[in-house]
Amino acid sequence: MKKIAVFTSGGDAPGMNACIRAVVRTAVYHKLEVYGIGRGYNGMIQGEIFRLFSHSVSNIIQKGGTILKSARCPEFQTPEGRKRAYDQISKFGIDGIVAIGGNGTFTGAQIFHEEYGIPVIGAPGTIDNDLYGTDYTIGYDTAVNTALDAIDKIRDTADSHERVFFVEVMGRDSGYIAMPCAIGGGAEMVMIPETITSMPEVIETLQQGWRRSKTSFIIIVAEGDDEGGATEIAAKVKQALPQMDAKVTIIGHVQRGGSPTAADRLLSSQMGMAAVEGLMAGRTNEMVGVINGEIVYTPFHDTITKKKPISESFLKLVQILSN
Ligand code: F6P
Image (cartoon, rainbow, N blue to C red; front, side, top):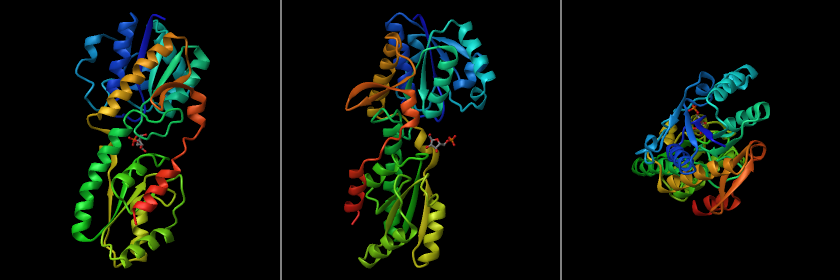
């Protein structure tokens, strides 16, 4: 292997830059030529491919977002799009790729490898932490800390005005962001897609708390919860309990930005290095992950098809500590 390329794709995540830096510096260390691909699969199709050097990634480890830009790319889902991408990759003589992204990115990478045989290693870049094959994904720790900071502030005003706040956090179909936010933010309840929490249960919890002289409540709602988003849930509560002053906060894309935490910088650096060394060792179609502090490689097929279960003990924690 002589020339590798790196790109970021899907939703951006704090720590992607630290991972790009680790990929570039590891490649340079091993005397490989390294290229950046701009704007994910779009840039691959358009030939937005440029040489990166050690100095190209100076002063980025602490920055949120991704210097390579990111995008979702419907054209890469078509055989014609992938053929155009392959033509560009061959033009530059690239013989290995590091893809930083989530399941959508890895699905594309797997098909691309099957069709054209280019080795690809993935690094899990998503705030959602919903990928099988790693304890944590790049950006998750930062996103949780950002959301928690907002929740602490909401708690202050909820308490002053004796209100119930429904706080919606990101996570797509997973409750991984919601769970530590609920535990760390001392929430009264958490609603996540992995478990069923019915509206009567929500109303009963609020009434019980009210009877015990609780005057403010925080309920964390994962955006993918079956009962709907925080706005819909709050509307149902207002109807059932009109005496309660129910408010909604959707934390939104602020969770995707900001300087990565120390944990995210470390994780991203470990993964970037392992991705390059994995490619050099002849690995392909695998995602690098960290499980119990150790680097592991998991086939894309498993990361795409297997569901990462949410810890039962976390659910128990919210239940017991919110009393
Ligand atoms: O996958 C990361 C994520 O932030 C999800 O939590 C969220 O559902 C989605 O991306 C939002 O995507 P977009 O930025 O395209 O609206």
